[in-house]
Image (cartoon, rainbow over all chains, first blue to last red; front, side, top):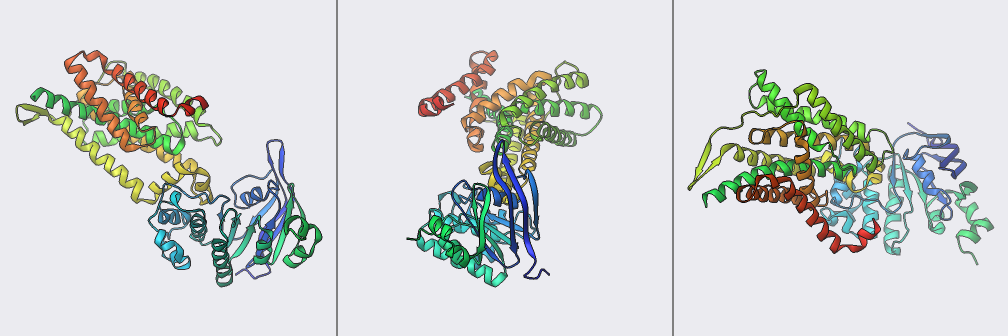
Length: 224
Length: 285
């Protein structure tokens, strides 16, 4: 058993390059078991690169990434399998596991039940994000990584998604790494956060500390 | 009237072979985006293997099955060479398959010589009205129907089939959920090998095969597949059947040497119609 103090994700001195361009430069990050941590920052700061590296989807040029347990990613832009049904999308979320029974996810996300046989590519953005969330849950992850949960979605859907996320976090002790354009939402959901700018961590702390920091408040919270 | 019915059954039989070759191209192209020019070689290798196995005393059925499995292995090897190295572009892989297709000539000539071979199929014929339908064509049609239906079931009802479709639709998302994209490409190549092999095994009793028979097969299979934009299995079947019937009618009523030209004209017509419909897409490419 992992105790709450053990980090489930440890990133040290992570550097990622795309050709000559440096996307991440010496990034360090900790996510502890049962913790919800936000990563905020402007477009092009390297947030997606960071989560793709943590999820093993791209190879770092240098540094160390240690993950204890299983990660699942809700990727930016949903990235569903458009021609497949919602149910098939969910099944493939459990590709690494033997048990691909989708009933548990319908129980957790009842909004998906009426969409079950619809083609994923024909759903609205909010419905697609719900499917992407369910697909990630199908992996029974220890660490859920969400890349832009609220981008382009209506406030009502965002509330529903945030509610589901809180419940999974509270009930299953799911550790969550949340990338959000909406810094207010991110700091509201998470207990801690990192601010990423131009491939470097420029600030980190509890959500309260970050919200109080003038730099963060100016740049991301639109404080008057 | 009887002659026309005979031509139709013969054409549909031949067209089934083209549809099988085309389906192999489609399966491989959908999953890997590679146009596999070695597709005809799978048919030739399987057909020549059957002739050897039958000579060695293996019974019909066993010989054909083994040859189709071997074609699957050849497909797998072709895939491993063409897409095994991560980061290979589909265009580079296309050239690799072209090279492997030519290399296959050398292997086939060394192993089987350069003379055409054939072997017996299902003998006899079935009377229907005043026509006599050759039993072997009916076998080709029946086997193709069963195999293509099975293929459709594989894609619709099994997780491997879903994963193949998922990889075709969104390779990045496939990686996100842990599907091995290269492994799916290799499965597609193995399936393509077996489909091509089956075409060769089925057609050889009615059309002798030699090392360079792959050209006719791949041109016709490609023409059939291009009707479905290299990604639609049902249109590929329609295209294959259409080609088979038209070619047999042209051979029967006009001249039997126009067979390949029919496929090429058909392919050109499809491309011209499609280009006319999407002028912007042509300018962009």
